[in-house]
Length: 274
Length: 315
Image (cartoon, rainbow over the protein chains, first blue to last red):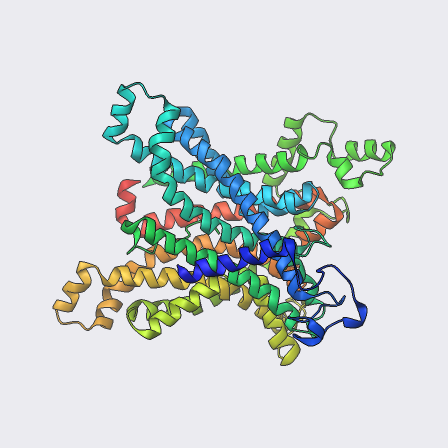
């Protein structure tokens, strides 16, 4: 939990700092400085095939990674929570529609949906974020519906109803606070998956477009120069892995912290989202 | 029993229909004019009109959908707009790479996860168990394509033991084909294996806490005897379920990994089709992959209902 928070904090710090300061320009091409090793001529982690500073590129890449994660998870939450709430409150045909719709959506792995979107629209950060967000939506909708149904069966909800509370008020005052902790945990896990999906898309050239530095894109570039400088493929991959690890650890930690009942049962982790 | 099978089958058919409709709408309707997508913004109106006619875009939408679905049911996925080859034939060729790759990936992930997961589960209070758990947590965070790059660096560039990419046809050189799939399969299987290890471990930990294991121990069986006679079968149920989910993420992971190794599989074709704006190929490939995901989910669903009578009763 602490390690996870530290890793996530590190990524956020690098991203925020990159707005104000990077050791060198992440996009400035210095041909004489190609393929420098770590530490040479002030390049902290070395330089790439264009003599760009790898460390600065990683910092700006962190910004990009977080941005994609935030928007994608934001879309998933923004669509999933109301839909799940609607299904729980209205039941009947609205519930059927949401649940069957989410069944179909769940058959589309996030990456496949993003590839499909990139094929039809222009490949780019926005397309990737929307596709990843849409692919995660059913998970949140199902989560809110499931937890919502439990809450709605409670006596205090019946009392609230008899006192004339509207459905939306009940959702806001009773359902949301009760599902908040589960949502936070799921959002953290979804964030980790969004980072992986964005990295894969950018690697394939379907995500973030050059010259904006992104970790996946850097790995794609590095592949062409593996025999000259294998380290170029190390740093971006390590950044991706550590961020994903950070969010996963944070999610696990938050789960234990927020929901002590779940603690002994680890078998529930990450079902059907990957 | 028969009712359960029929219901599940009905749901499968409905899901396939819904998924095909969704894919059709995304590819054919969302971009506005598919012919424009294929030809690009600089196309002449005459070329556009001709392609529209050729693609059947002058027909009503519902008719185009029915023609497409009807074709698939007859094994006809349409014709590639770029190469002019029947898409079904292309898919068949690519599957001879992608299916063995996915199966080898599953094999690698099982070979890694079952022994490691069992050790981690049995020794979960010991150092070895903790180390394995930590390693698997780290493994989950690694993107398969990065693992692939690292493996290429070590085994292809440094050691020159295995090819860094490319593929020789099975009919030309079966050993060579196997060798070119080895690194891709390991990079896919390593990451999936890390995920599966966690499930195997928690299944074993759960089973060890069950009453029947205590009873078996009270009868005088050793811990490993009790596990072997009563534990593994019970632990297998959740693991089999996850394995099904894994197979689907393995297929998607294969799309990326095939591109790392320049393997002429479905994933590589999908990416090339995107580069060429070959919508018919994209539509067919995505439909095929989604269809496989749905069918695998169906099989897993049915199989664990068959394995575990308790789930059957509540179905």
